[in-house]
Image (cartoon, rainbow, N blue to C red; front, side, top):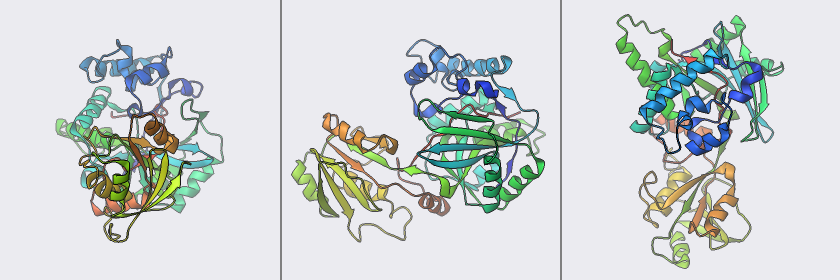
Length: 415
């Protein structure tokens, strides 16, 4: 069962939400955050990217930067830019991209569910990134930003959400950077709160879509606080962390594409010939060509696009990892032909999220920065859930979720 609870959210007054809200901390660098915050002292970047309050070049990992985050978090509350709700609520957060809306329930998930594997992951985490988020959670004593979960489709919850969606939202705005619509409702009716809690209790698992490091950090901080409390009971606020949970079928996963700096000493003709061992290769011309189905890739090389279709026998339909296009391309192109063994550490490859479009792949190759580009068909949410259920881990750089959650709509305090 999935244990969740409502919480007393800390959030901006309706008239200030567009001043406070921001992109997540991990989708932009320090200078981008500095530029986006500008002279807006209410921007959440002063809490989630507080290095912008120091001279250019100050490390985001400097101890004084974490201290500044806590100082600014207190300042936001003292000035009334963030106010804590008097009662525990669930919340609904809707995002609309390209005419499609997905509705998430903002809840507090239990750290024990993460530790026991009831909250399932599909990516590896890095200890240095976990430690960074742990420091941020510790010093603020809060989950400033939510993690992004998926749950199996549920008709009871869907009906409840749609009932609220027909009412006027608490927040409703178009974000300046992504151009997508973001809406937010407060669930205060106790019967509805109980229904949500009960329906989640029937679910065997929740799935991390995005935010593996934030989830790990929250669970580790919760475990620390358990050890520090001799009277620990298990229902303390530090046992919970904030998540936005979406029905799996509503989520949009975009392609996550690759650009490569060299052909491992081969000519273009030799590279194309090497591909024919495991792929049916077809030249498509100079117009951008997008893969149309699983196991089809598009390659851009010297001004031409190619279709690459993996041959039967090059993948295993019974293996949730071996059937993935990210695994096929990593094994048969990047490793076998181009000798790129480790996608996390190689400086010969870079990755481009699908929101930028295949035109970005073409631009980076045509500029001479990169030699070739490889576009993949997107992973499905069902594939992610199958892998998480099997206890396996996705290959690196496999998923790109859009739209990203905006930060600053609601915050969860650990006490």
